[in-house]
Image (cartoon, rainbow, N blue to C red):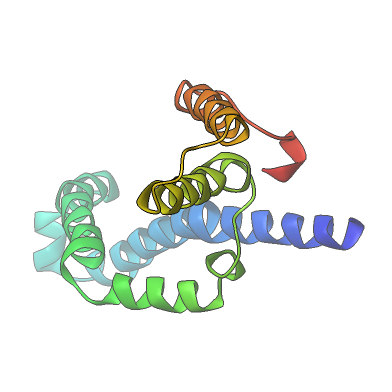
Length: 157
């Protein structure tokens, strides 16, 4: 458990660093460096951006929508994200076994019960009382999950 805890903390640290800290630090660093090393020393650019605040606001107005568009293209229009997802899927162990939580307790047992019932009905067999009880229990669990409830222990999630 402690080994797993260490890797979880390491994962959270990397996410916080790369998603938030490094992003903000890189954005501010890029703005400061480009302004004070390029714009501040070029008279024609200094006329367009007389202060760092003017440069910051202008680049934010242009840059934020542009980066949103680039992010949209990355996820929706290019093959880059689907390739990343393929690689993640290939290395994700949960794609080859049941994920924890509702899948194991409710969803897949329901699918299995449906298949077993279809086999019996296609062979002109009647569902036993035990079959009907299992189906009723699964139906109640599905209603509970659909309503926002959880099945199983919190540890499984």
